[in-house]
Amino acid sequence: MDPAARNALTTLGLLGLCAAYIQGGVNKLLDYPGAVAEAAHFGLPLPPAVAAATIVLELGASVMILAGWYRWLGALGLMAFTLAATLIANRYWELPGGMERFMMANSFYEHLGLAGALLLVALWDRRSA
Image 1 (cartoon, rainbow, N blue to C red):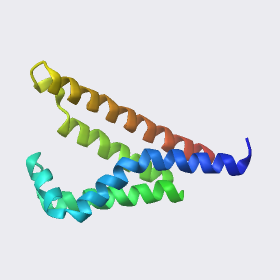
Image 2 (image 1 turned 135 degrees about the vertical axis):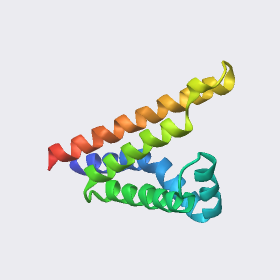
Image 3 (image 1 turned 120 degrees about the vertical axis):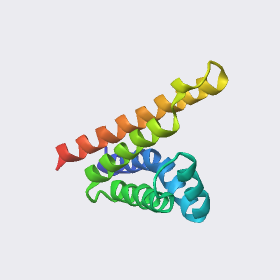
Image 4 (image 1 turned 30 degrees about the horizontal axis):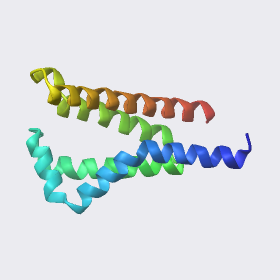
């Protein structure tokens, strides 16, 4: 494959992988009180600090991945964040059967897929270093 096409497709793929984190970080930045309320809703300690750290992580790690600057570290950071957030927010096994449980289970496994993709990006980046 042509190197320019490969670079463009790689950038497009990484942008797609980071899209949810960029969107989430920007939304939290633009509605910081809402981000604090979300952290409080999930019972996290120090909701203002958690909200701020989440914004920094989502946006900072996305920039690291897209820029190729310690891409592996940004990918591992988002992977760990995704696993933690998924275990906190998508506890589908605690819901009774029905559509809400079904939708939350889908979200849980989709997030596991994101975490797996981020792990592969980290491994890919370290291998090519």
